[in-house]
Length: 410
View (cartoon, rainbow, N blue to C red):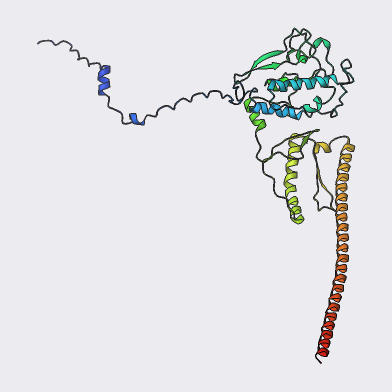
C-alpha cells in the first residue's frame, strides 16, 4: 500500500495594486469633473490712493493731503482753538501754530515772571478748576496746567527736536517734539519711569503736536474724548462721519459742549396745549422708570426737573437719585431743590407777565380800533349829509332854470 505524503495546499495569489485597482468598481458617489467648484480668485491688494490735486501726490489718508479726513480734523481743531488758520496751510504749519499758541500761553502765565513784558499781557483762566476731573479742556485752559517749566528741562540747541514718523499707511512726515518732553540730559523722557522721578502733571503741558501728528500719546497725558484726536483712518472716519439727524442741542459736559448724535429725527412741535400736555403725561412715566434704573445700576448722582408751559398753577415734576438722597449733607439737596423751584417760578412769572403785556397791548389796540371806527362813522355821516345837500341844491338850480326858460318864451 502506497503511502501518500502530506499535500500542501496551493497558495492563493496575492493581489497586486494593479489587480486591486482593476477589480474596484467605480463608486456611484464619485463627483463628476463638471461639478467640481473652482477656488475663488484671490483678491488683489488695492494700491494706496494718492491725491492728484495736492503737490507731490501725497497719500489720500495722510496729513500731507489737504483733502484727507485727518487734515480736516486737524484744521477743525485749530479753528476750535481760536487760531486763525490760513487757507491752504500744511499740517506742519498747523502744528507750528499750535506750538506758538502754547508758547504764548506759557509766557503769559502769572508764574512765568521772567518772560513777561508789557507787550505780552497775562491771560486769565477761561474756566475755573473743578473738583471732579470732567474733561481735559478745563485743565488746559487753567493757568496751573501751563506752569513755568524748569530751565534744566529745556534742551540745548544741539538737541534735535524733530523726527521722521511713518504712519500705518507708509507715509512719512516730520513730527516736532515738544521741549517739555525732554529730560535734564536732553533725551526724551519716557512714560514708564517711576513716580518719584517723573514731574507732577501740573508742571508740564501736553505736546499739542503729538496729539495730532502721531496716533500714540504719552502715558503721562490723560486721554479724554473731548481733547484727544485720533488721526488714524478708522478713528477719523468715526469722528468726522456726518450724522443724519445732527447732534442733541443744549447738552454739555462741565463748561464745554458735548456733542452726542441723535438717533431719531426731531418730531414736529405740538401747537395745541392740550395735546402737548397729554403727550407730556404719557412720556413721563417711561422716562422716570429709565432714569431710576440707570441710577440704581450705576450709582450716579442725578436730579431731574420738568414742567409744561401750561402748568401755571401746578408744581414741577422732579426726580432725585437714591445716592443723592443718601448724602449726609441734606442742605445741598435742599439748596438744589429751592434753586430749581425758584427757576421755574421765575420762568412762569416772566411768561405770565409777557402774556399780560401782550393782552394789555391787544386791549389798547382794540380800543384804538374802536375809536378809529367811530371817527370813520362820523366822517361817513358828514359825507352823506354833504351829498344830500348838494343834491338839493342841484334840484333847486334845475327848477330855477326851468322857470327862467318859461318866462323867456312868453
